Image 1: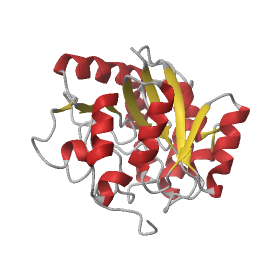
Image 2: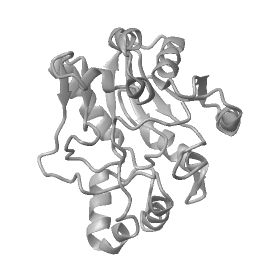
Image 3: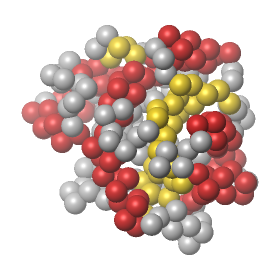
Length: 251
């Protein structure tokens, strides 16, 4: 089974441009995502999917310099970019994460993968975006779908937000697909460990300074660090997630 992790990345973030290559403990944030995710036991290949806009040349250059597979495609039709990236790898199953989640957890990826197979789901995730409720911290977000189902979405998704946000076609209409959501027994959905604003970046810098080994630290370990240093999450307390139906107006 060829299971490919595809990391969505671009430089022109509306709230924090260039964020995916910003340094954390001396390495670009994208490198932390790749390094941590690569410890998953189920992933056959890791790829970065960025846009064909000149502004994303630095992402391709960094990937090339570091022997990371990279695919470039549509800037605003991210579903199309994702589909062709997956097709280029011969993937059977696609795992989607984003480049602004430097604490992505490989053990959680593996747990979700086992859950996806057990549920025989069309689409599995450990959260859905707002307005749905979540039980894992934002920043651990992982989605899984088979290649045939991704192709079905690519062929049928017609709404702009379905194309830009890649996966909403599976869950925005109840009953269209079998959607299985892995929930945590304890609700930690109030924690925000993603980097989408300057405040998020400042918080993540401060958090990384307190992590002994950012490569192997689990998300449970991060919870312990946060509990011992609650002032960290005050740094980005004003940041919030985007609604799934918000689209980039430039498209």
